[in-house]
Length: 299
Ligand code: HSE
Image (cartoon, rainbow, N blue to C red; front, side, top):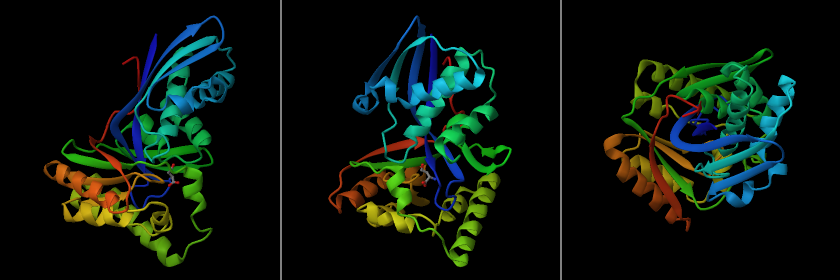
């Protein structure tokens, strides 16, 4: 039996739209057994309803794609997926599914593809690299698309930097959150984001996490998405008052993520919960760390 574990991810990190991301200590796991025919998918966890149909299953489709690329026939499969990463909340559930499928299929194929190959294929499926790169590599990552593939850099984040996530009780599809964005932006806003993105990366490489958080400012996507997320403004101001280094949208939202040094985390979680509650939205909070290892198989 093959077992695969893939972390949740948080993309954008404020200014690094479609570029920066981080892997989090929250994991989907999947076990795979080859069978003589057919596909059986058992889904454990609270997302069994969306993912139960093996004919429209992102993990199965992704496994099939890798087998096709390798020119190999796939046997039947019995998958048991334990889905902990919440669906359509901005924590990389679709990337986790794609990466689980690629790692599982690659293991069945004798690991003939490298992580860089899998990053390229996963990015083609997902459309942007900012979730799939940290899901595969772990850590805080920066990635860009080029004609010849995806280039990326990874930086480990120490365990005393905590991510407090507030996951509101509603879904927001990435397609809806992307549809809210403008077709073009001003040079002023582009320079604002370019400078902050560069500063976030430089601060991480220097290990200056106060600066890292302070620079997570954005004018390219969050202002257009906040109207879709009631309470977002109150969550940010509450988190900062409670001592967060920063508080931004996780991916396309609606989850909000605050970065804190560990001794402030409980107060920040409570403040974020109050922020959503002020708009009548229930949320679940979690205190996580950065996963610096990324996806694994045969754990
Ligand atoms: N960079 C993406 C976005 C992440 O913000 O739309 C969501 O998958």
